[in-house]
Length: 225
Image (cartoon, rainbow, N blue to C red; front, side):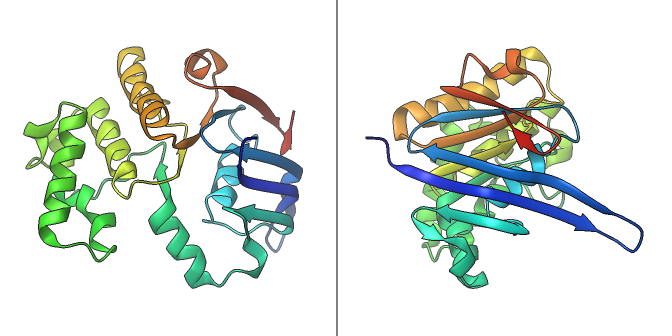
């Protein structure tokens, strides 16, 4: 029986300002099981990013119940949520979010530096990750010296640095050409196949991800279907 990694029940998210109120998620109920690759498919503004931010503990729901790795998020301290994000979840964003003042190796080292690892262990892990995607020679370069596809692949490698149980990828291929999109998605599929890592991928295109996912769900106007 597959083990649930995430269980969300009737999750809502409402944003408001002085003028209006907007409901980004409307009663979302979802179970994500260990070792699956789930696609969340929807157009821009459908609620994909909000949903992934809540599942990844980057935002809090307005209402509903969320359990992540068997723990009730509503009862977690902010410190506990930060610890889970650091040690169990890897994020890949639509924009690579690499720090321009740091080299490739230093960007990958960021999550490792927060995990109390020895410098030698961190160095070994960085080399292992870069070698796994055939990019060993890029460790000393800066993001501005990389192509768009290379930057997004490095972002994916950084997401794997902490050996996460869950990877959340928010439209990671949206700015990539088909060839680089395939390379990135293959990195995620290999991580799932070899390590059993659970992956959630948000995309506007089912055609782009369906070869790589084990299950797909649509989202529209904040509702899953």
